[in-house]
Length: 121
Image 1 (cartoon, one colour):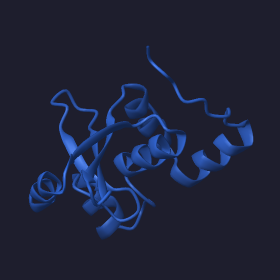
Image 2 (image 1 turned 90 degrees about the vertical axis):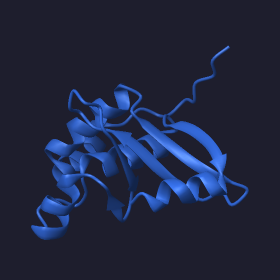
Image 3 (image 1 turned 45 degrees about the horizontal axis):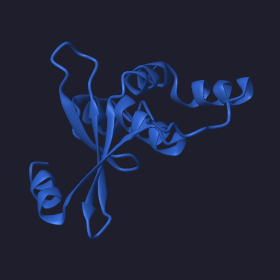
Image 4 (image 1 turned 120 degrees about the vertical axis):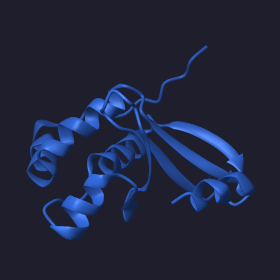
């Protein structure tokens, strides 16, 4: 039996604000979420976590990101860090939205496995 989390619907006003803030990245992030492309990888017993988000390319690359601060994708460094043109990349936005709506895939690993994953950054 699959249990789905109920989330209240997003209003048109909320969508309008999100679109104003994030532009084209909002649509791209929602596509990633619709494809179940966001995993929250949590270490145990610490509870620390990082998100793994798939890209939209045919290669289906996976990017590691901290939703508020960092993403391993090219766009993060080019558009956000270097040019300052966006607030965040589509992967960070997908991680934020999926976590807030409860639709990300939760994966539990040991703290050692999480540390190894982080060492690849």
